[in-house]
Length: 193
Image 1 (cartoon, rainbow, N blue to C red):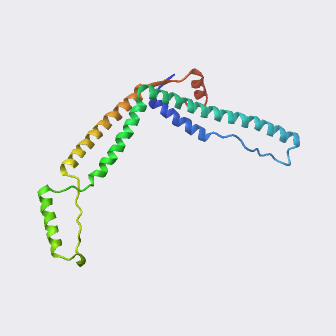
Image 2 (spheres, rainbow, N blue to C red):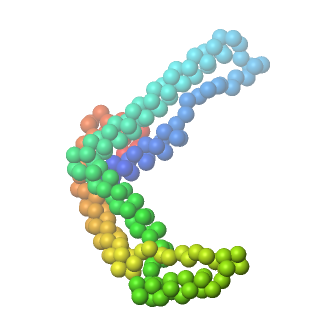
């Protein structure tokens, strides 16, 4: 049986839920006044067999889940999805850097900045350093041109990221994994497929 990667991921989620729902009996309740020793031991032996079977079924379900994951990982690698996902993570990290730069103040026109500096320096000459007037000035170093250029690069990365997401989405629907017949039978028997 073949499944697209999208359906395989849904199967993985179903397997996770099925595993959470499974349990193995830990104890058995027996009525003390109506049970003799042989009856109690017979009940316990029966529950032990059920317990071992339940544990084996849970382990088989876990193994099945990881077999499906392994098939998905192999398909991701061979189809190029893994590389694309890595590139998407890189692009999202880059966008985060660009977003922090959006809040960065920019310098004014060079002539205005020079005039402002001259005025501040002139004011400082007329006032003693000890009079409480500020003696420093913060000057933004990013120019409007640089900020605009970075915003253009950010927009380009956003467009490329959207294109890459579309590619991965398409690959998830077109790339398939193959489940062998034993796996399919087990999944059907356990009402997962």
